[in-house]
Image 1 (spheres, helix red, strand yellow):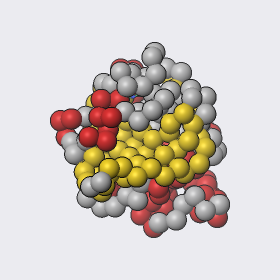
Image 2 (cartoon, helix red, strand yellow):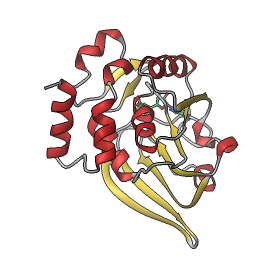
Image 3 (cartoon, helix red, strand yellow):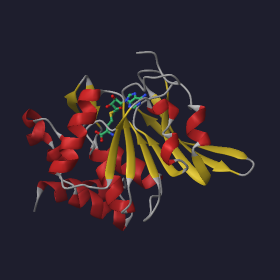
Image 4 (cartoon, protein in one colour):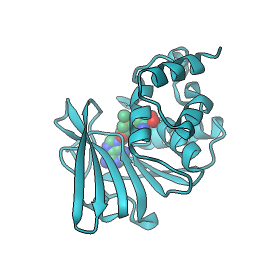
Length: 211
Ligand code: SAM
């Protein structure tokens, strides 16, 4: 059995992975393609790993939690903030089978994410360099916005760029520990749900932390 399948089976047995499309995406996408050479051998450890620029690729269980909580489905328009290695965006695109827009503030990581996605044969992710706290107006509105860095508060532009019924997943809290929020845009306003504690690197930008 491949190490990837062993990890996915564990994430299923722990209750992190539930839906067939997300399970299939995590069985298909090779995480080693998204890691620097020295860390490839740890690809199927369930932990975050360094990817350069003092940033990390999220742990597989966190990618599973966020993909499940986002209630992804085929054809949705998705914006990710924090491309990092490109792995999470690739898993997402595998589920939606549509273009995923992913913003990264660091030039070096935007470049390596594109190279990783190319290596993995993932053509449905567009990596854009910029400050994701402003969203990406050009392709808005989005059915889902997934933020993979920790914000001090919810950037207002992200709510503006959601469709009605659209969902935003975002870790909000201090620089060192946060609560994962799922925010649904409704006709009367927004509904906030807390999905539990988490730890992400800081979201740095105009509506985030100062660099
Ligand atoms: N989703 C990534 C993956 O699959 O590898 C992991 C993301 S990593 C935990 C967080 C990323 O957010 C870092 O690459 C960081 O540079 C980026 N970031 C932080 N602030 C940002 C901002 N304002 N706009 C875009 N990216 C940002």
